[in-house]
Length: 177
Image 1 (tube, rainbow, N blue to C red):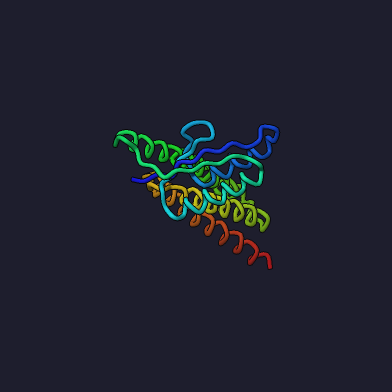
Image 2: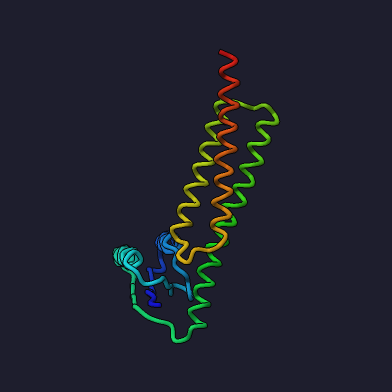
């Protein structure tokens, strides 16, 4: 398998620049091998993302180097893939945790008969955030971790719970008209 290895350095006087670059690297889904040394699978999508990152670092008067490479041992490649998957699993677990909180929230609102339009909007916003968060992680999930399907199923359950909540709110408002 081919890999795209890149290294960067941004001026040390700007912590904002360092944090901005770090966030973009994390959002891309790259794996940090060492400080400011990252790797991603070699493909057109990552090549474009790395090129954009290079241009942004250049604008910050930083240094950037990239290489197309292969591992020298299968065990090294396996280890890199495991580290990629570990990052995604941690992210999916965060979404899973927030889905569980969403279920508790819906259950509590129904239990308190807090069936208001404001609660409906709040829960809809939260559900949309969960979906967006999942979608962003899924884009970075290059090696398709197994937990993805589990979290996807939880999101489908969250959609159903929200639909139930929405119908209860609608029924309450319909009765009060």
